Every structure is written in structure tokens, then in C-alpha cells.
Length: 300
Image (tube, rainbow, N blue to C red):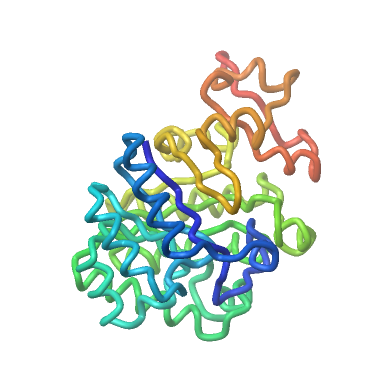
């Protein structure tokens, strides 16, 4: 079991596809005391893995202390889910590694500043996250990147893959944009059709596969991933408890299946992957319909 701990929604970027949207305006960041209590309470429940996320966890002045507290409490895996900017400072990298962080999941959304910095509305962010990945790899840390697929970057996915292979990341993931928050407000700008992105997704995966890297996709159903079924992240996402703003999601897998995602009862029922496929986030067919979804039948 894993804990996804949202430490607050402050952030030093304003991504035009951010699923958290304006939460930073609605909720105060949790205090150090609130977070240490949650760290201890969830460990007492038997949870041994923790992901610090937000918002952007590294903008907190107490993030190193919080990581140290998680390590002292006994967590075996401590992941930092981040936009990666602050890791351009080697002293910060060393401090958070010494505190006990074991995995780092920076986000990178373009192969160059012209794409990444426009999407994140943060000039200079691309150079910082690239340097951050280099710093973490110099310290022999496990780095697993995430790239959100949007209209602005889907044709760039193969070049992003080449960049990540050259940076020697341990894993990279392409995640289809979730149409909530800022992505919902900017849906005409950021949400592509799944059928249009797939040639670029598969080419981007091939680059990593051929280089011996672990590669994954998220929120792309099986019917689009023929021949690439082994690279669907939902197959391996651990059971996760989410401590959100002022509420808790006890089991994020059940949330995705029962509330977040949807399957078409007429089209999907005949697919051989019906029992294991989660379907798309429910907002996608509300926007584009179901015509792109073609069930995989046994005769195929």
C-alpha cells in the first residue's frame, strides 16, 4: 500500500494542463505539524511507501525535514513527485537524498524550452529540470519522469524520449491529459484526440524499449495500445491512499474504476480486455465521443 500525500497546492509553475487547477487559491498548504501527523498515522495503518506531491512539494521550506521524518518513521520507499526545477541545485539534491528520499519523479513536457516552458508558463523551467535530472543521476538516484500528453507536445514525444534516454533516466511515462482543473478550462488548446497521438506515443515508446529503458503509458485504453499492452501503467499502479486537500481517497484504484474512468457498455463489453481495461477518464468521451474506441475481439 502506498500513501500519496498532497502537502499543499503552492507551485512555481502555472501549467495550462494542470489537473489541480486553482486549488492553490482555495486551500492553504498543510502545516508541518499536520503533515508529520499524517505521515505517522498512515504508517501506523501499515503503509510503507510514501509519495510527496502537491502542488509542488519542493517549494516548501520544510520538505527536507518532512522527508527525514518519513524516513525516521520507517517508510521504505520515499518518492518526490516534482516539476524538477529545484533539483538544478546540487546542494538541495544532496540534502534531500541524505534525508532519505529514494525515488524522484520529475515532470518534463517538451524536448526543448520552446515547448516545455510555454506549456508550464515558466521561463527557464526546461533548463532547470534537465539539470536536475543530471544532478540526481550523478548522485546515482532512481529517476522516473512523467510527460503529460497534450495538443502542444504530442508530436514531440519521440524527441522527448530521445532526450530522456540520453539523460539515462530509469523510466519514463507518457500520461494522457486529464480534463480537469486548468486542462478543462483550456481544453480546446490542450486536449488532443487519442487516435491522433498514437503514432507518436508508440514511436516514443519504441525509442525507450530499444534502449533498454522501462517505459509506460497512463490513461490510454487497451484498444489503442495493440502490440504495446505490456506498457500500460494501470497494470502495475500500486494500491494507493490519497491524502488530498481536506478529504481522503481510501483506495485510488477503486476511485478510478468507480468514479474517475468509464467504459462504453455497448462497445467495450465485446473487447477481450474488458475485465482489465479501465477505459478513459470519463471527461474524454464527453468531449470527443466513442467513435475512436474499437473493441479488440477474439477473431483479431
